[in-house]
Image 1 (tube, helix red, strand yellow):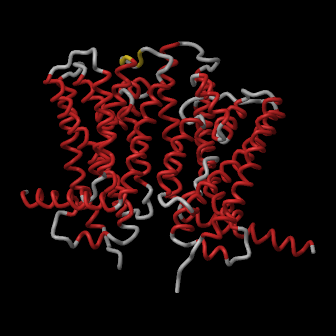
Image 2 (spheres, chains in turn red, green):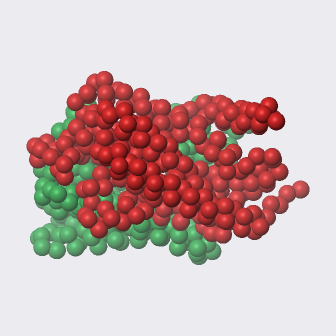
Image 3 (tube, rainbow over the protein chains, first blue to last red):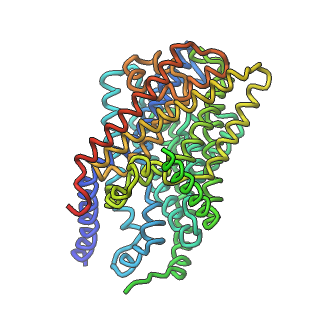
Length: 274
Length: 260
C-alpha cells in the first residue's frame, strides 16, 4: 500500500522535474519576465532615495535602509509570489480547448498547474535572491532584516501560505474564462487592483488611512506586502500568527470557491475535435 | 509617399470596421485604457503625497509629467503598441514571411497596420488633466505648439527604441515577451530626469533617451525649456529613427524564414 503511495508521489516529483526542464529551455523568456519584477521596485527605490535625500530622516517610521530593503525584498516577492497561471488556464486551456487533454489524465488539474507554475516561480525567485545577495554584499547599509529565529520561521510560513493564496486566486481568475467571453478585461482590472493594494507601489503604511484599511481587507496584501514586512522584522510573533490565520482563512474560502467554479465550469466546458 | 498615405488611410478605415464589428473588444480596451491611465495618475498622487517638491520639480509639475505621459502613451497605444505586440510574435509564429512579400516597406507595414482607437480615451483624459493642472498658469500659444512638437519627437524616440529592441526577436525568436519589458521600462519616462542623474550618472546615461520623451515637452509647456533640451530631443529622435531602420535591415539579413 505504502509503495503504491510512493509511486503516486514520485509521479508528481517527476512531473515537477519535467516542468523544470521546460523552464530551463525557456530561460531567456523567464529572464525577461524576471526583469519586469526587477524594474519597478528599482525605479521606486531610486525615487525614494531622492525623497529621503531631501528629508534627511524617517517617514512613517521607515528609514532609508528599511525602505530600501522593502523594495529589494519586493523584487523577490513579486518574482516568486506573484503567480501568473491565469493566462494558461483561461486562454490555452479553456478558450483554446487544451483542457481536454488534462481531463482524460489521472492527475488533478489543480496540482498539475501547481507543478507547472512552481518551477517558473522558483527560477525567477532565485534570480531575485541573487539580486538581493548583490545588494547585501555591495550595499550592506541598505539591507535590514530580522535576526530573530522565531520571526524567521513564522515569516517563511507566511511566505508559503502567500504562495498558495496567490496560486488559488489566480486559478480562480483563470476559471472565469468559462463564463467571461473577454478574459483580458477582468485580468487587467485585477492586475491594477493588485498593483494598488498589494504593496507594489510603496509600503501600505504610507497610504491614506482609508486605502490602507481597504488593502488590509483585500487578499493582495497577504500575498506580497505582509511576507515582505514579515521578513524585515516589522511584525511581532503575535501579529505574524494573526497574518497566518487570515491567510489560512482566505485560502480556505478561495479553495471552496475554486472547487465550486471548477465543478460548474466543467459542466459547461465543450471541447471539439476530430 | 502619396501611395503610403493612401495605404494608411485604408488601414485606418479597416481598423475602424474591425472596431465596429468587435464592439465588446473595443469596450474592453476602453476600460483597460481608463484603468491604466487612472492607475498611473493615482500612483503618482500617492507617491508624492508627503512632499511639495522633488528633484527640482514641484508636486504639481511631477503630476503634470504623469498627465503628459498619459497623453504620449495614449498616442503610442493608438498607433503603435498593438503592432509591437504582434511584431514580437511574428518570428516565433512564423508569420513574418507573409509580411515580407507584400509590396510595401516592411517596417511601415509591421509597425502601422493596427490601430487601437480605444486608447484615444487615455489621450483625452490626459489632455483634460493637463488643462486642469494649468488652469492658474499662463500658457502661450507658442508653448502649446512647442509642447505638441516635442511630443511628436518624443513619440519618435519611443517608437524607435521599441522597434530596435523588438527587432531582436529576429535573432531570439523566443523573446516574444520582450514587449512586456518595454511597457515596464517606458515607465522610466514618467519621472523627472534629475531623479536618475542624482542617483547615478551611469543609470542616467543608460536611460537617457527615455528621460527625454516626457520631460522635454512638459518643460516646454511650463516655460522651463532651454534651447539645448529641444536640440537634444530632436537629434536623439532623428538618430534613433535612422538606427531603427538600419537595425531592421540588418536583422532581416539574418532572418532565415519560417520554413528553413
